Image 1 (cartoon, rainbow, N blue to C red):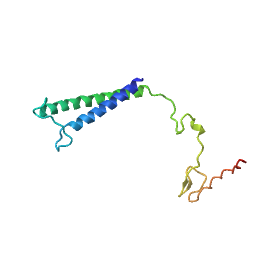
Image 2 (spheres, one colour; image 1 turned 135 degrees about the vertical axis):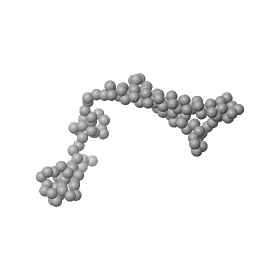
Image 3 (cartoon, rainbow, N blue to C red; image 1 turned 90 degrees about the vertical axis):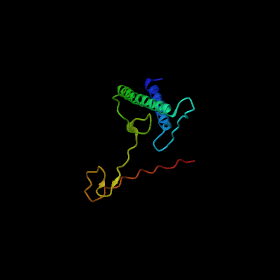
Image 4 (cartoon, one colour; image 1 turned 60 degrees about the vertical axis):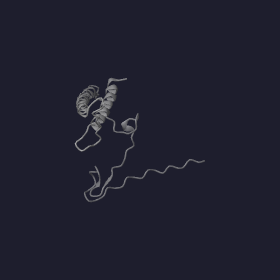
Length: 134
């Protein structure tokens, strides 16, 4: 397993824990606050302090993990060309050529030979192929 994948999974776990801890805190308007009872193991104030500290630690870990992942991604980057095709495994040159969409104002896009205001000639229709005999 690569280091980048391991750190990405760890980052997702930290993010989920951070969201959970934030939602457990008692907010000004009530929210999803889950406080302890005074008769319990922790008082409401103790639980608030614990959740605040936990939030701070998880937030720091989240930021540090983000920086570490960015550094690793930048160091593993390659100078390979970016493929513009959606077909995986097929070279970019194998993609079929598409005619330029018609511009309603001045002909086909990219057609410098068409005068302004006149539409470009329609592309030739493909030759009909005979149906195979059955």
